[in-house]
Length: 233
Image 1 (cartoon, rainbow, N blue to C red):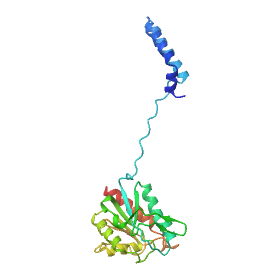
Image 2 (image 1 turned 180 degrees about the horizontal axis):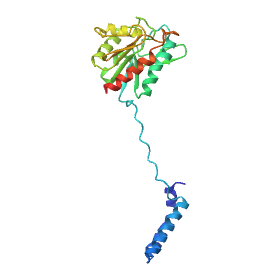
Image 3 (image 1 turned 60 degrees about the vertical axis):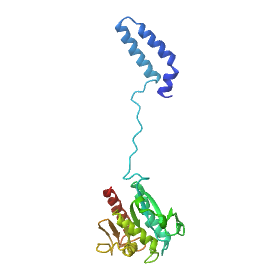
Image 4 (image 1 turned 90 degrees about the vertical axis):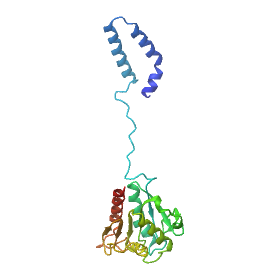
């Protein structure tokens, strides 16, 4: 039973005790009554030994998820959709969410991307995107080569780059940046590794291109993207 419940259950006893204490004429007797009263309450469990703990303030992640959204722009074609959903997009989404960001997926059709065992839901069409709603933009490679570079995605990326907010692109997704005119005068990754130039972050190796000697850059790219998001706040 909680201390509050115990006090309620013994309210009549407490009132009587205080009445007797008030009637005591001797200060010494009053002190004895008071000490005895405290001991009785402790034994009965009416008074907690330590003060009650207040609810801990929720730990705030790097960003408030509802207010700090990242737009993820996957293409709808892939040489290995299952691999890229699980090992590329899945890693990006997981890392961003752990950092406190809400990831919104937008595709040209607004339809889900379907792998052999995994489905990636799209929350909107590219035509419905308002870039001002997002703190950053990330483009997975999707092992799509030069395929799927639609006018919609180019238009969104042009607007995204113009905001000055972080934009990350992995491997062949840099071709979307090129089509948007964002790579002119910029350094960008060609081989393995991650390169940042201003608000643009690019990487050279996706899960599809990785080998035992050339590692996948997905984690490093996403880490650099998260760091850029943090510094831009």
